[in-house]
Each structure stands twice: as structure tokens, then as C-alpha cells.
Image (cartoon, rainbow, N blue to C red; front, side):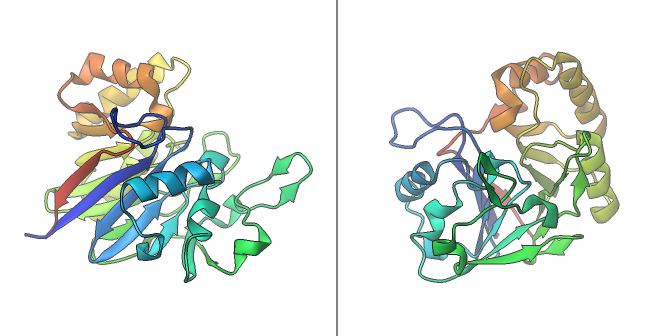
Amino acid sequence: MDEAKITVLYDEGAVEGTTYIGGKGLSMLIDVDGERTLFGTGLRPRYLSNNLYVADVDPDSITRIVISHGHADHWAGITGLLRQRESPVKVYATADAWGEKKFLGTTGIYIPSEHREKAEREDVAGWVQLSEHLFVTQPMAFHSGSGNEIFLVLKSRNGPVLISGCCHCGLDHIFEAVKEKFGAYPVALLGGLHLLERKDKLADLYAEYLQNTGCRSLYLNHCTGVTGINRLRVTLGLKGVNDFYTGQSLTFQIF
């Protein structure tokens, strides 16, 4: 039976006893349907380059890049990949996630001129099917109203698997969008939930919602934070709430 494999290439945590570098940001590699999708690139180009090397991932083997939103810790590492590639690669993001370089920094995804010809911009305005089993969601508005975020959904044998960058839109909004598209709530959730800074009340609401929707396979990292992960475990238990750090992988059966 065919499988999809998801590997964390960049996160604040990294597997001990390896030469992976942990740092602020998130990047996950999805191997499915004979293609490779890089979801996010982390913050530091050098860290991403190192972790690609440690994971034995040829930069030119990556089919496409998907950037969840315009915060630097999800895109600024992209030059670590582009400078090592021979061929151009498509970069999927919402139109408002792109920006320009200013005196005090950048306003969104910005690719220096020396690497720009290797990045083919693809603006996401609605659901996009990347391959037989992998989809990009429609843009979901931040609660703050300051931007949009996109997610990946893997169609596994047991149901949709949601892959999240930060979930700035709120967990219920993206879960309901997945159910409307696929007829079922996600059976597994990977990535960030933005529960840093001891957002205990929000974590408790998320835990109750996940319990009610039947999603009990969680593999969390990045902006979920250690305190957020532990708070979810109060309601959901240790078994279903897992750390998912740089160097770790998961496999899912597909049809």
C-alpha cells in the first residue's frame, strides 16, 4: 500500500544526538504521489541548508514550496534552498503574504534579486490540488484581520490530515473548511497552533473542540510551545498529543 511521509526539517526543537539545528520557524517536507512539497522554510537560510543536508534531501528534488503566511519564520530561510538549486521552483502563497524590503526589514515574503529567477510565484486564492492526495486550502483570515493563512491537507486512507503553520485563523475555522471540502473533520493534526505565552483558556477550548470532532492524533511543534502542548495533554492525555521536532517523521497510508 502506498504511503505519504512527512518530515520536520526546521523547528525550535531537534532530535537529540543529531547534527540537526533547531531554531525559530517551521518547515516540513511532504513526500506523496512521487512528489515533494516543502511547507515553510524556517527563519535562517543556513539552518535550513544544514538540515536539508543532514536529512539527505537534494534541494532539486523538491517539487514546490508552500508558504503558509507572510511571517518571516515561515519564509525567510528560502534562500538556503534556492541558492543550492539548479532549476526554478514554484512558490505557493497568498498574494498578501508577499512583500518588499524596507529600511527596517521586510513586509512579507521577499526574495533577493540574485535568487529571484529560481522562484516562480503562484498566488493562492482558493483551494488548490497539488497532486492526487495533497491540497492547499483556501486562504483563511487571521483573527486579527492582518493577513491570511493557508494550510495543507493530505487525503489519507483514514481521512484528512491537516498540516498547519500557525493557525492564526482559529482551529474551528480551518476544521470546518476541511469538513466542507472533504466531508469529514481532520483525523490528524500536524504543526503549530499558536499557543505560546500561556494561552491556557484557548488551549482548553481547542482541546474540547478536538475531542468533540474526534481528532485525537496530534503531532505539534513550533508556535504551539511546550506550555501549549502540555496544556492540551491535560484534557487529551499523553498518548494523542505528541512532540514533532526537527528530524522526526510520520507516515500515513493513502488509497
